[in-house]
Image 1 (cartoon, rainbow, N blue to C red):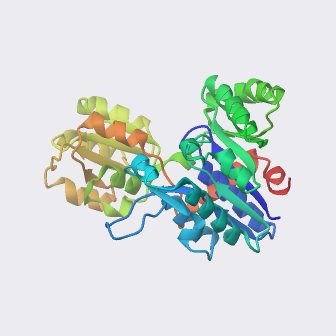
Image 2 (spheres, one colour):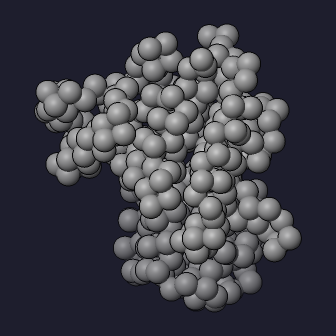
Length: 356
């Protein structure tokens, strides 16, 4: 029977896709025939006539060069806008059978298949399609990815382990991802031994990495529904710091020069702040309130390649939306792919997961 590893988590946006990608690329490097599968995805379409598509599945299919169609790689795709309503229209037995049959086709001729789970290990329980339930059906091992950002993280991991045991599934272990640097030593010296004393094998502790999590200007613009007014050449710059431009110009210049790779968020009517930000080397500017800047801003922004983006939200609403936006790896995103391989390869026991 083909080997398979089901990657799930205790919370959404924990890094499952990057974990699967790192494992799959490492297995391919070792000469294994690699498969990818996502039993249940959430997606959207550009028009009502188009089928729903899970973006992560489309990305993994292209990066790994998989030949299987989207309907096989992700047999159940729920609407991202109304998941509950979509679920209630489904026949549970049919869903389970669709998953089993699709997996059989995807896994044919493969040495190992990496299965990406839904948001959490518990998601889908009311459909009888939680992570351990599907893993049991597909004879897969379970790897739990968790962000270690507090004492409750240990409770979550142990709770997930017990939940898996209720379905007669033992976790292969857990990876603690995106650990803040100021908690890294404590996580390694205290959290890891504590989990291991409870019988949970900690297979990796991955520090938070700004380069990996940094959004590009383009991703931020897309998330905000912004309009690019100038400086389109700089849309693929990575942003690591966010600055609110709501002070005097004198204070702004000192503040701007402290931060690198910065996005400045200010009102479109603050010409003084906009000019100061460009002078201080801002990577991009977001102008809030649908306010156009003075016309003299545009040629200067084009010359410097500094994107000027106009959005309808107010300044603090814009910052809040940006902080909630998560960057996703894309097929041509060499920066994130290379960084993920390096980071996961350095801090995770990939061999144990591929060969156990």
